[in-house]
Amino acid sequence: MYKKEICHFVIFFFNIVSLRLTAKWQALYLTRNDPYRYTRTINFMEEKVIDEKRQGESLVLEQKLEQKNGNQRKLFIESYGCQMNFSDSEIVASILAEQGYNTTENLEEADLVLINTCSIRDKAEQTVRKRLEKYNAVKKINPKMKVGVLGCMAERLKRKFLEEEKIVDMVVGPDAYKDLPNLLKEVEEGRDAVNVILSKDETYGDISPVRLGGHGVTAFVSITRGCDNMCTFCVVPFTRGRERSRDPKSIINEVNDLVEKGYKEITLLGQNVDSYLWYGGGLKKDYKNASEIQKATATNFAQLLEMTAEAQPGMRIRFSTSNPQDMTEDVLHSMAKYDNICNYIHLPAQSGSTRILKEMNRQYTREEYFELIDRVRKIIPDCAISQDIITGFSTETEADHLDTLSLMNYVKYDFGFMFMYSERPGTPAARKLDDDVPAEIKKRRLIEIVDLQRVHSAYRTQQFVGKTLEVLIEKESHKSNEQWSGRTQHNTVAVFNKEHFKVGDFVMVKIEDCTSASLIGEAIDYSENN
Image 1: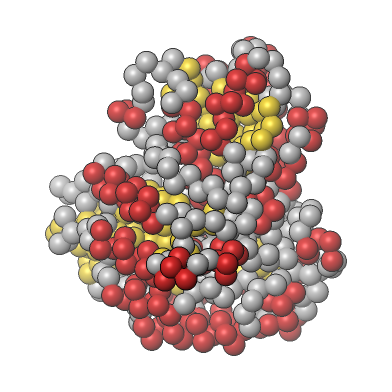
Image 2: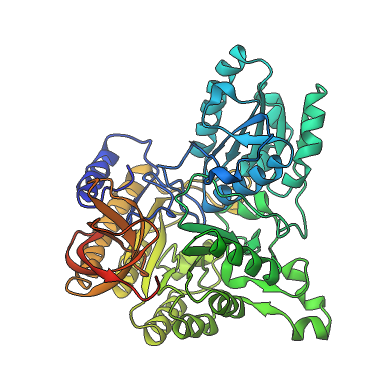
């Protein structure tokens, strides 16, 4: 389900009821029809969201001109998991284009099959194993086909993957994609190939990614890799390594290139964008050892935002994801200063209980989160805010749960991503804390959280009725081929009649009605951005 603009909310709540019938549902979400927010069943994860519509999508080059003439070999690549995985798949496709590969949607004709994996919980990994069974059936028909596993699951299991899944020829971690040409040579010579070495400096800043599976309007631009926060429930620091930032010059060059290709919106992407810090290269944790000149000339996230906004004033700019402990006031002032930086922040709370936040190793309290929300509202009064919330974390009591509900009532999020806690092997929580909240209690608390978010989402969308908003057209509406679907700067989906407008246009739309998750309006005219 990719949330059909008007009716999808009813369908969504039918799925909530099914929580009582099956233990397979580990998380639900209530959100707007956002192509960047990845999923109907959201795998429990730290500050990542997954779009089930795109899970396992065979990704192909977006523009025919990016298919290299003369490339004879066929690459079939599927991505699972978060935004970073989809962005990484574009890097992989770019590297392999130089090795004679063009992408294909036809698994049966592929010379090389790659699956970019998520390891955030067991269900995500089991999905990958089921796909490998499918590949195995195809390989019996096409024995020359090679199979490689990429991403976080590859990093977590390493060489063990080759032992458990005999079909796999190659295992490549998130920091080793530049080694793919060498690994492929090993495979072609009949040897299994593994590179899961985590890097201290790899950002792929020198790779110009091809664009896979999109609509030519919006694109990801990666600015950081890895994470240093060490939340106790999260596998990301162990599968993606320590935090490092990309050279701002390469970021601006990529943005400029996207403008030349006709893109209208970018999302600056990272595990924790607010901690972006470029001081000449290297791990963020080593910044303390930088020279005085390096520190004086360093670029932080607020400065990068302003550089990007000034480089392309007609380009919409978003970012994902923020961590409350790292979001500084200068970022908010940068957002307020530039009209092309969208007034929207995804600001995961995870819990409303200070005690649980401490158990999660989230470096802020309930009160500090409130103070940050107050600053956002003061500096950017019309800023939309969304959340991640985990219910049923280790030792969570009913009082802790009520703290989360009261936090939601204070903020009244525009939309959110709600999860039941799922313990992951190797994380600090798995080693030190018992997963002691019964599944039935987790489910009941999750339903209460989702029910409350439904009320808040309806309240927020209703505030837009009667207003005229700028909407960037992204695609045809799923409900009607006579309507366009796009998003406002607040990340709210709006649908309206096509008339003479086209994909990629900025259009002023008068909002006449709404659902809890989308806006319905009438196009008035082009916006000044066209």
